[in-house]
Image (cartoon, rainbow, N blue to C red):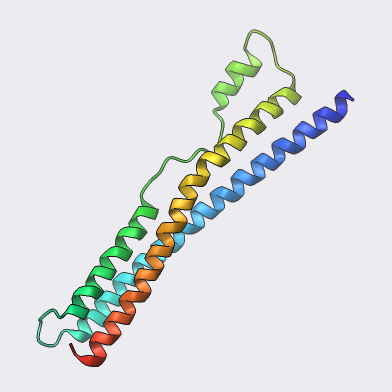
Length: 158
C-alpha cells in the first residue's frame, strides 16, 4: 500500500507542475499579444490619424479616436506591467523544512506538501490571470473602436 501512495503523490505533484507551467504559458501569451496590440494601436493612430488631419483641428471623432488609443495603450500597459506571480516553491525552504529539519521527511510527503503549495499558487495566480484577460478584452475592443473612429473621421473628413 505504501508504494501505491508514493506513486499517487508523485502523480499529483506532476499534475500540479503541469498546471502551473500551462498557467505561466498563458500569462506569457497575454503579455506577447498585449505588446503586439500596443504596437498595432500606435501604428493605427500614426497612420490613420495623420491621414485625417488636413487642417490640424480636432473634431469629436478624432478626439474619440485618440481617447480610444489612450485606453487601448493603457490596458495593454496594464498587462505588460510587472506583477508578482507565484510559480515555484523556494528550494531553500524545501531543504530547510523537509531535508534538514528536525526530521527528514519522506519523498511522498514532500510531493504531497508541494502539490498543496502549487495548488494554492495556481489559485492565487488565477485572479491575476482573470485581470489580464479583462484588460486584453478591453484593449482589443478599444483598438477596434479606434480603427472605426479613424475611418469614420477620414471618410467624413470631420
